[in-house]
Image 1 (tube, rainbow, N blue to C red):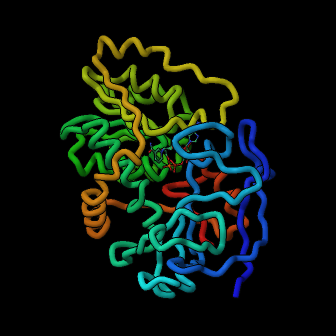
Image 2: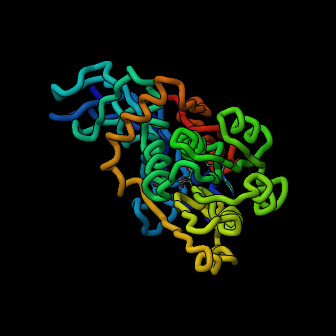
Image 3: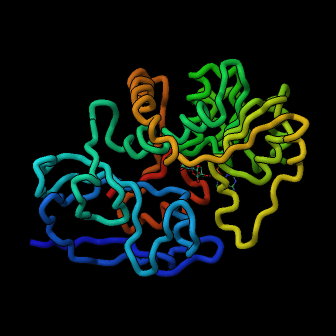
Length: 333
Ligand code: NDP
């Protein structure tokens, strides 16, 4: 017996900043699961910056969302009915069919959630690709060594807040974060960052110099633009930049100029390296082991900003791009 559910579709493609009109909330009839499939009722879904890129009709590492079609993304669902022995009603699974209330999944597209480590929503946050991104970006791509000084931008966000804490746990001598409000700065200091600044208060370069007067060895870049330029200016010899994201230009309508001081990469022997978490999935087991331990022991704390209801998912996504989140932005269905 099929049931009614709602889903969010891409109504139109944005030019520049997306608006609520780019999304459509639609009532649909949900099919029954076939052999080897399960029906889940989504209880949590993730909104993430990379989804902005998928709203454009442009080739990238993730395919564009199709106009008029339901969006997708990370979600946690509770199994309602199952046509496979692998799952039973009531099981919680992580999967990629967010932006809808009900989803029919192939068995292999569902990953059981082990709720003994942390509350279920953590499987869209610190125990997900978000945490893995922070972990491999810092330890493998930037190759952080104990005693070094680290700068993290968008530090109050999901990836950034974990990156700063992992850096401290791995022996960084000084960890500096930037964020978009004084309130976020205070919360970063509470999380254990040695220094933090509000990037809107004065030029990033000046703030970074004040926060790390002896320079930085590693920059974990979530923002690009003035943050990247400031980091290059403050880098010590043999410094490394892990380029994780450049959120300051995701809504740009024109090509954005690169850092004006890139020539310093020569004299300072800098390494700037972009990365995607998909290339580092081999590190997942090690990461999950360490992160689970850090969460259990309270050595890593994580925050969530929760928006309720599928109808508010577009607002949650737009809010994420504007910086309305501290930690992971999530939608509870
Ligand atoms: P966040 O939770 O960090 O949310 C985005 C944050 O970006 C906002 O909270 C906002 O905080 C900040 N921001 C928005 N616009 C600007 C701007 N113009 N200048 C400075 N800060 C801005 O999101 P995630 O943790 O999910 O993602 C963080 C970064 O990591 C993104 O760039 C994302 O694309 C990237 N990423 C890359 C992956 C990879 O494989 N390479 C995987 C996952 C994420 P504020 O109030 O401080 O402005």
